[in-house]
Image 1 (tube, rainbow, N blue to C red):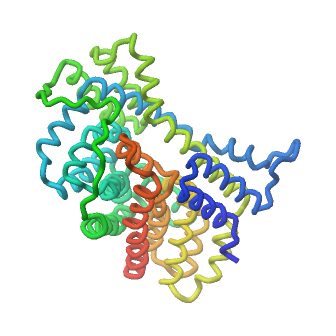
Image 2 (cartoon, rainbow, N blue to C red):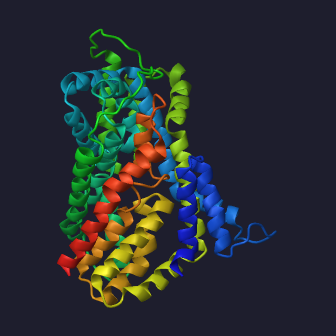
Image 3 (tube, rainbow, N blue to C red):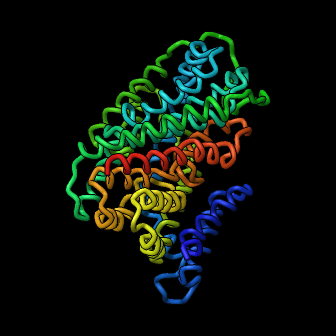
Length: 441
């Protein structure tokens, strides 16, 4: 029975623990152990190479590059904050956006889009830009759940839709894995259909912000640590100019090398050369970066280990194989079931990038057997991978917004970020995926 598959059991356990506000990191570890045990893996057998905790630890390397990127980007972000550039930008934004509630929400979504394609710093901008804006949000009585949805939209929709920056990495992974299993495609092919996923997310954002979270919500005016309240006009200093140059260098290096660690190192190096960061303060900058992004980095590491436990157990393949029995006869139902499975897998692993290789091996031949067109196959695999990334407790697309919105301790990761983003995007992505695949054939 599908409901008793170890993948389903593990993801349900993780989600339930998170919903009752159990620590996210511990929730993932407990869920991995439960999933491994239900799949028949040993908790501990001396000399065995498939002990659950050993498999989890060995799989953590799958996100090691991501974790390193977040630590270095955290240090870069901390350096930017110390330079005063973040405060200057936030003050300017506050002046422009003051009194315009919906304009604030959708502007943040627009700004977040740049972090994926134009200046690919991913979530590192959030702890710099958002905390200084919290007093403005409080004044306008903005529901931070709407802001969480807008930020997550900016972190996801651009790379799912546009093959530039992180988007190029996502689309290339789609191309490589789908082509590997018998369907020759190019980035041009993925770009021609993945706009459906982006449009679905945009509709979800508009509906959620304008309907579910449009009402006023009261927050206390709690001082944000590290954010000084001052009415004095802020001006660009030499340190701020150095930080701005570092941002440009980071963007250029990221585009050229397609490597976030290289980009972050280049940004840090530029800030040191320009005097924005003094050598004697470098340890403080690194410690600040670890404080800012360290927890997210560790969650991503453990999430990769969790995914390794599920894939090593064979539970993912079993889940898809058993579900394929119900996919015969109706393309619409088959599409819905495939997307639902993608949602479960991505909710557990927490990354759409890591889900593609897992599902492509089974979905490509399965879709061809059912009779889906190449365009439908691309859309189904792309959407199935993106699903769950928004609402997963272990996703950087949810951890990032929480890191900024909870700077004053008034924003819950699960109930104020994960649940709203799940409603906003996963539901509409499933609808878009099913309808789109039916139209494409």
